[in-house]
Length: 204
Length: 204
Image (cartoon, rainbow over all chains, first blue to last red; front, side, top):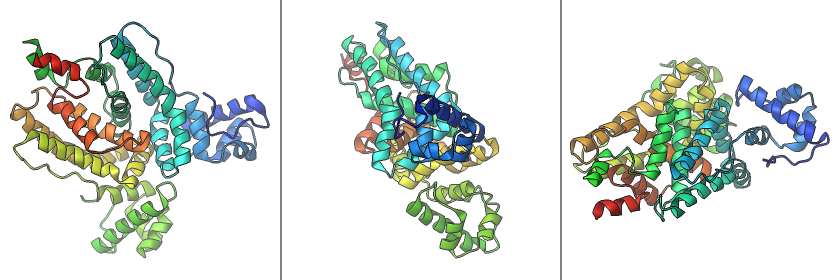
């Protein structure tokens, strides 16, 4: 997506923009978010520090735009199969956070921006809104097909999915494999595997 | 709990330890995690910078110990009531992350420590293990009472609870009120409110 933190179009035009965002991701992978400096990104991109500061007010803004460019938030195709579409949604989220730079930098960025509501809104615009709207569309198709309850709490489902995945990646280190993906989908499509006893009651 | 990152006991003894950790929390609240410096904490505590460095190898370690001291992870009393005990567990987690310093600093700390397995283990020791063991004990009581399925995935339940709460606090800004707490408990104790259609099927 178009950079949301850049004060846009730079002296050097789009080519220089893309070179700087590439360089920011390279430095991020090599040094980690806390150690990343605008100087290092400028050197890696072969531009002056002042060029970067003309476009981005801060390191946070630059890293946010660099990560937003590779953050998956695509539309989920209508497959006529609710389970497959929701699995696409969960896999997309797992894919985003499997990237260590994304998993470590996004929460640090959000923490730094939280006290600044205007910046936080732009952060959500870059990383949440489009992804959530596209996943909501898939959930609404599932409701229309009668596969999901009509009063499903679509926002809560998405908070549970993204929250569980990010928490595992960042905090507990538990695996993000197929088992987790299926559990998270079934939490919505089926009496969840958390609750086999209830499921057995229904089957009797 | 006892500081897990401190190389303690300090020259100044426990009184000086507690003064430094208090000062670290004050500076954290006033300036936020990214801006916090060891210098500022030393000045606020009235000790030399070198005293702090004798105990803690880094800013990350100092902040981790300062937050661990106020992180709720208490044993959940046996109330003979599974719903009430799980609500205690969820409320404890909400309480931890309702604290803005905790919600913004913990993920940033975890992100910084993730590439260092030994430090990450100490981080988990300070913030996860005791809380998870105490909540697991409450979940196991629920299983013994027959209120929860015998093969409940206790780790996944805890990842869903903490992940959803932290994600809302840090990323989406959605409320952490009674509604959320009840939803998260009922996700485990009952056919969840996410799934009213399934519930109706069972009732027929």
